[in-house]
Amino acid sequence: MSGRASRRKGHDYERAVARTLRTVFGDGVRRGLQSRSGEETADVEVPVFWIECKRGRRTNVMGALAQAAAACPPDRRPLAVCKDDHRPDVVAMHLSDFVELLREWWAGRQR
Image 1 (tube, helix red, strand yellow):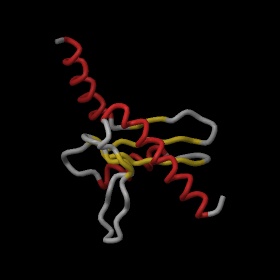
Image 2 (spheres, rainbow, N blue to C red):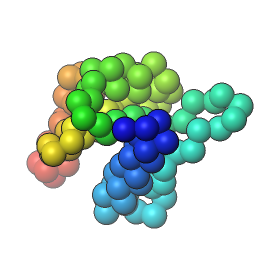
Image 3 (cartoon, rainbow, N blue to C red):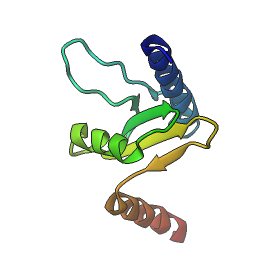
Image 4 (tube, rainbow, N blue to C red):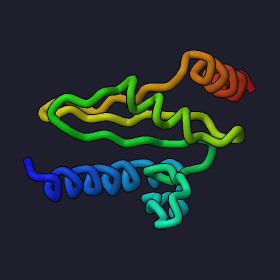
């Protein structure tokens, strides 16, 4: 696959992830556009999470999570959303962030 086709595949995937997450977070979700100033932005802008998306023949989930964690500001949690060709999408996050998310979810269910 050419570089241009690969970039388009990635951008199309970021748009698809943004559409999916709009069903949860509403219209404020959008694809993060990389600025020419070199300032880091998430691939998909949502509250709470810093999302890095990867789409390809064989994605590097741990690499995507490391990339998200490296750029993630302190008020967000890094999250990798990856999809290998002909496979279902997967989400990866650090266990400590997942446990915190579960605690909040479980506390809400107990009310």
